[in-house]
Length: 360
Image 1: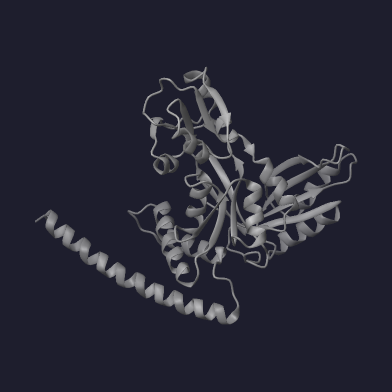
Image 2 (image 1 turned 45 degrees about the vertical axis):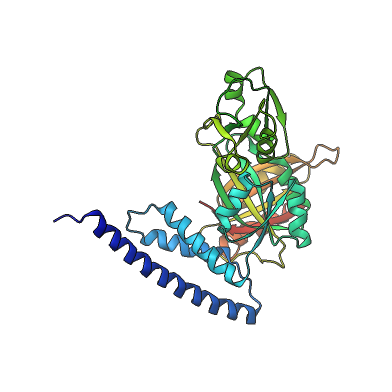
């Protein structure tokens, strides 16, 4: 005989009580781990350990929960347990409601201390000065390519990358009412304006496009003027009481932004191997024929895959460039260590920007 609604709800309530007991048991064990870490002087947050836990659970997951739901649930569990020891202070481009804030919460879980900043420079300064333990900055978009300011700051900053998170970005047109009538200006971060230019050309060709420091700042301003609209996510709309006048207006339906998690080495050393890792480098080579080709040879010889190669002007006035390179693997692997050692011998400048578990 099929169960009725009351029976099913009763069983769910019973499972919830079991889950609560198990979660509190896990929290107690996490407290014991925290006591040992304090005795040893070990960091509270270990991204490679959390990546291993989530990957292991996803492999064991029989369903019907989706793998991404398993990751979200356990990231929140681990975030809540970490907060019992000490919540992480995380800087990101603010104000509240930005995709950078969403990336920070998606990476660390919601049990963090928020440190919103007005620029990428301030995010780096906050993490370097100790105002925040970690910073979260965008480094690459699937439509517009690299975020050049973040790359420039990584080159000169003492911070290193300890993690990454890839966010599916949905841009909505937000305003005080839900129509497209009477919009005189559209406010957003320059990257968002570029990612939505096709839609704007078609639907709001006469509206001014006004660049602001962040999408959430655009939403805040749009809430002050009925003739203004903003391009931002649902989080920003909720934060500032705006309606969605048009859904998902980005030109690329699969628009994604990759964010880097940065901190001082004394806050967290380079994570140990998780089984799925990346090394980010920036190098320059002598200005001679074949020099760029030569730096790729060690990677091929040692069987190491390169997943990103970007160039940025060195601003020396001599047409010199820095090359940003991502390679698969971890320096603890002999073939990766050998490839990096041979690569370094060929470079006029060589800096490891970070070694970290690869995000989803």
